Picture 1 (cartoon, rainbow, N blue to C red):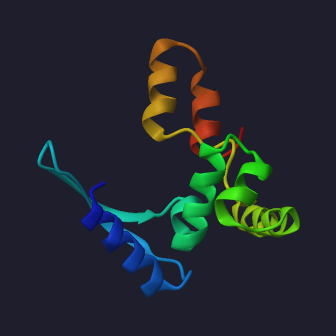
Picture 2: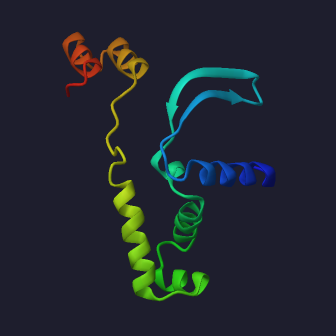
Length: 126
């Protein structure tokens, strides 16, 4: 993402102020393909811009709270409190997402699952 794209994203997160937004069109610029529908943003993208920066810094520091203290000039309890606040927002992140219809049909086609298992997965039962 170029600098203009980053500024646009920051402006968008400020405009929405944490409210839910739905993306209705996605364009793959290099391929000239556009997809329309209703796409919910991932939880990380729903964080405020400053929290996204904080999470990125935490990942870059390999989870070192000591390094985070130095980078942001804050105390250990401040870093921990912010991580806890962000983690509470991210708790609803799906760690075992439902397979897509195409994935289920591919597995059925390969014989990895039975027709009954495919139907159960497509209906949301595991």
